[in-house]
Amino acid sequence: MKDRYGREIRSFRISVTNKCNLQCFYCHKEGHNLDNNNNRYIKPEEFGVIVKTSTKFGVRKVKISGGEPLIRNDICEIIENVKDKKIKEISLTTNGIFLEKYAEKLKDAGLNRVNVSLDTLNPKLYKEITKFGDVEKVINGIKKAIDVGLTPLKINFLAMTLNIKNLPDIMKFCRNIGAILQIIEFIPLNEELKKYYYDISTIENEIKEKSDKVITRKFMHNRKKYIVDNLEIEFVRPMDNSEFCMHCTRIRLTHDGYLKPCLLRDDNLVDVLTPLRNGENLEPYFIECINRREPYFKFNKLKNKNK
Ligand SMILES: Nc1nc2c(ncn2[C@@H]2O[C@H](COP(=O)(O)OP(=O)(O)OP(=O)(O)O)[C@@H](O)[C@H]2O)c(=O)[nH]1
Ligand SMILES: C[S@@+](CC[C@H](N)C(=O)[O-])C[C@H]1O[C@@H](n2cnc3c(N)ncnc32)[C@H](O)[C@@H]1O
Ligand code: SF4
Ligand code: SF4
Image (cartoon, rainbow, N blue to C red; front, top):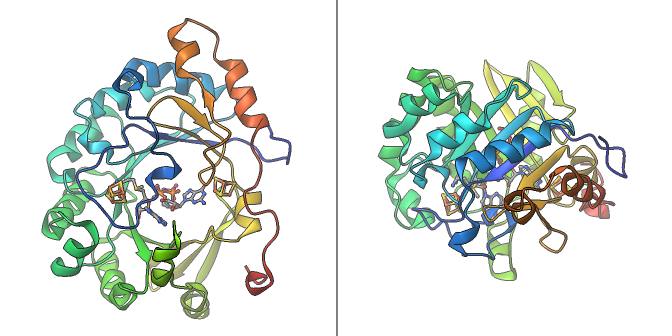
């Protein structure tokens, strides 16, 4: 099914919890942190029914996220329930702290690949950013995930004024371990955080100049990937980017059971858990969610017209 703007639905991003073992100062919490009502925590088999319904509307990829998805002790059961013959890929985004412990079990449960967030390799700066994190554990988790075949593994590097100097080290690290590097534009959630915003367009242009090949992810925000000396570098630049939004093929599920048409909006959610628990057919709720979808950034501001 296409939405009112002609955008297909291909991927489903599901948040399995809003809780986390870290406290990154910038966290957008997937654009939703309202409900702490434990009665609305979704059970593994409920995820299964919701995802199965989503395949009728075109979903072929599932992204599992959080909060931190690995703090749910039933995460493997969730993955087993989400598996479906129509789902071509299940991936998970994690801070990596518990990855060493879970990697093998996740692979056995049916997970295909992981993205691991890593803004710096410097232990002191990592702790400053995450409050409680030990970067050594993340590195061990990444190595284990690659060992067990949760690949291609992506490193999520959130580009900010306070860590941008660490980018060359992260590039070297990714090249050494054979990971894809994903450079993400910072979304400042309030005025206070704006000082950390770093415009990644200069870096993208430099990398583009050096690249051997450019790939466009047509069904994923038209994102660009550059291959530089065998390192794959993907840019995620959502801010003020109408092209990104016009190629958005994602719907989301919040940890408390609402279909969410857009990451950056919380005013147009569709409750899917109540009808599920009432034994209703979920299709009308998906249709409602898809009809409520609209590009968040419809027009670029002048300063960003080159995006
Ligand atoms: N505005 C906006 N940002 C997004 C969207 N999808 C991903 N992002 C940003 O990209 C970050 C990284 O997302 P990941 O969970 O690692 O996965 P992904 O890059 O979206 O997906 P894959 O590349 O397929 O692994 C998110 O935390 C967001 O900041 C989207 O639909 N809209
Ligand atoms: C919300 S986290 C959830 C999954 C997991 N806890 C993790 O950190 O990977 C998913 C991704 O969102 C990114 N993120 C969080 N806050 C952000 C912000 N303000 N702007 C852009 N990306 C952000 C993180 O860097 C991370 O890669
Ligand atoms: S680890 Fe992920 S969910 Fe937790 S605070 Fe950091 S970005 Fe947010
Ligand atoms: S419409 Fe734009 S901001 Fe909203 S989820 Fe899609 S890409 Fe992200």
